[in-house]
Image (cartoon, rainbow, N blue to C red; front, top):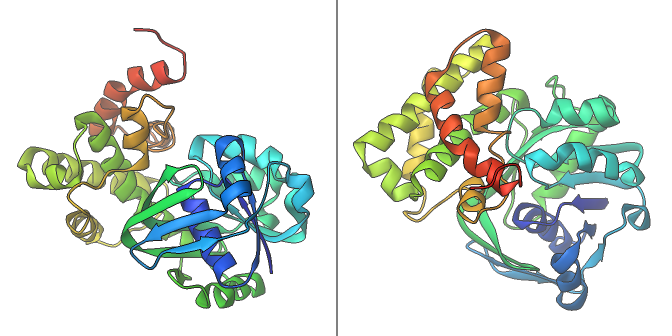
Amino acid sequence: MRIAVFGTGAVGAYFGGRLAQAGESVVFIARGRTLEALKQNGLKVDSIAGDFTVSPAEVTDKPAEAGPADFVLLGVKAWQVPEAAEAIGPLLGPDTAVLPLLNGVEAYDQLSDAVGKEHVLGGLCRILAHQAEPGVVKHTAIDPALHFGEWDGKLTERVAKLKNVLDLAVGVKPYIPQSIKTSVWEKFLFIAPFSGVGALTRAPAGVLRALPETRALLEGLMREIVELAQARGVSLRPDIVQKTMSGVDSLPVDGTSSMQRDMLEGKPSELEAQVGAVVRLARDAGIVLPLHAVVYACLLPAEKRARGELRY
């Protein structure tokens, strides 16, 4: 099977690397220092599920050189989806499926509008990993999992085909949920509050869950997302907040989100796709979610500074 990884950060590199390790034909679309590192040294992954390398790694910065793929794993940041959707054209054949691995709840619609819903699967990943240096990924927590499926819940041949391939990959748990749309919202309920409170407080998971004040804030933000999901016709499990907080409790004490790390480093982040998306979607639904509104307002100046829109 031919698999293209577009966006070779920690997430794309990890899952693409596991598929290459399993013997699939994987090409990484990368740029800058990551491109050069993969060309020279291949991919190195230090993982709690077992270290591995992909060397040599097939890598290019030109999608046209990679040719059409059976599947495209999209590992870009959420705010890069529109740009990526324009760039992946050469990777798409008549039956190519794009699987987004990113955070947020809007990627499926964005990609469907850009390349056609016949080319898009719903998807999400669960992993705690970061790029230690170009071409080197460190996976530090969470059993890596890929959840994917058709947005309408049908079990199609391409979904079954991808599941069969992933079943052979070490260090990846593939899962086809009954509703990938619901699963995407369940992850969103975790990542947006965790990222927002982490970025605002500059504190890791161990602190956020231990202090009664920040723990209560996390739970309040999660309840607001349950309200938003219901307003948009997505029904979440009655115990989803408790289950999600159990997930927070299982994180390493020093665990942080990629959005939090980006904001602390002064880089553009996924603020608009996470906390900002809650505020925007709530407004569209005619409801007010005050906790998200406050967190978003507090983080917005730093985000605008990182993007060169403000100076202070």
